[in-house]
Length: 337
Image 1 (cartoon, helix red, strand yellow):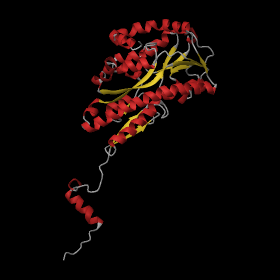
Image 2 (image 1 turned 45 degrees about the horizontal axis):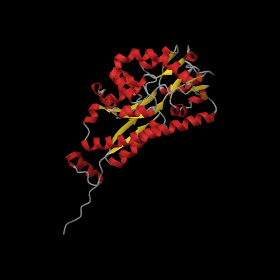
Image 3 (image 1 turned 135 degrees about the vertical axis):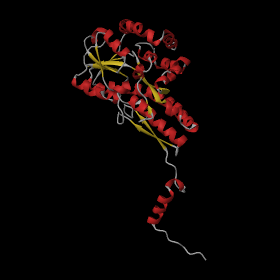
Image 4 (image 1 turned 45 degrees about the vertical axis):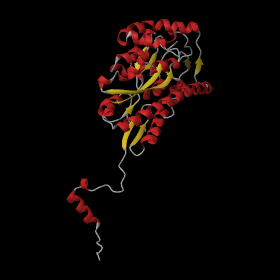
């Protein structure tokens, strides 16, 4: 008959030190999931915020136990100025910057900043699903980045702290916050305004204190950030598009186990479809909510008004056509049909 042997905690730990932890099997312990960080700069209730949360949910459903996606909204992890650098350094795994942020990596993506290029969001969607549009996801590989998807935000409207905003001459001399984009800077200079590059998180205070007189944004961004509370007039110009590219580190993405990369890709495709539907719904809803709030007046423009804005913007197209490529511009224009 064998005698039972009692082994103390200290003896066990001493034994592990002697043989090494690597030699001891993890019996009854689950392997920790791979933690992936998704950082973005807007509120969770925006289309991008909702799409990121949906991506996390879908990854959990497909890869639960293997992958844990953590979402950091509102610049809580990295802001506008640092997120691309953080991605290249491996400090974050997914980001979704505005398309305007990529002009330092490829001039072709400046296409999306051309004013009055797309008639509506359906045209934007058609272009992004085309071969020409999809090629832009791979256009930043040389810089160590891989585009995964385009996420919609919506068409841009113009707002100011002035009572009148109908024609280009109404913004002459005013200071406008813009994203860091050469095309957007040229757009406002063509109107005689003074563009000020500024991080998204700083815009509300800048509008409130008069550091800038106006800004351009989508209905959902204006409502979620309460820009309408510190602006007098919003002109429904639909003059440009704010969309995002979800990007990851090319080397890291290529080194993932095939099953994990497949699961992440499938979740991204489904989250993209969901998020783009949310964007359309939110913009329609938030335009109504801004109108109901009664703080900023929404101003509709006539065809003649829009024609005047388009006329002023023509030199911007000419200036950037060489960098972007006439073939790409023509492909985008075809999506308006």
